[in-house]
Length: 277
Image (cartoon, rainbow, N blue to C red; front, side, top):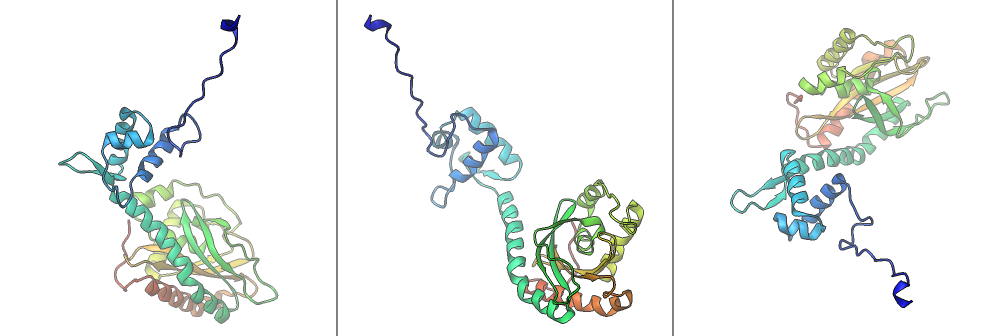
């Protein structure tokens, strides 16, 4: 009778404390693979990686090959061991530049708001849209609502035009494939007209938005460059149409450009021919 008693269920032992499930997706395993490298263990072989990740050597070999192709890993030709690749440095530099421009620009943005008495915004490009990292409200009774973190289409915003003006070659061609739906009666949607506007921004160093994204709103923006001469952000001054007159743009644009230049210098930029990619 004792032989007929149910046997206790077998308990699975999780050999990797970082894993909460028995099986990990390839993406998660690849991330864990990258995180396995440390300052002390900056170079590891397939066997050691497989042991630390508790996965088969064939899995590590496949993932390491893919990461190697993307530049996220590099391989020592003499030992065959792997280390983190320069591709990760490039990605980290992008993150750092955003963090830097957010913190370094705050003083200048506040000063620009005090000078213009209008909303002042700091934007970066996210695929076909801009995201406002800062949006400081002006002190006027009639003013635009502050919307830090808000997303707007890049093709019809002054900040977005400045950011797109920094794209060249395949990146610019890719941007042209994104849809350009009309948001207001003034929105410019045609490709030829859009390309002409971007070229104008490159020539004059600023962009003017005239009720193309939101009715009743105008904006003047200028690009911000990093130490490598790449456009990483844009600063804009936005206000209601009834107060931000077209006749004021020739005087307002140099003020916005000067603030963008001050932030660019703070980022380590030295005036020279911009780099487009």
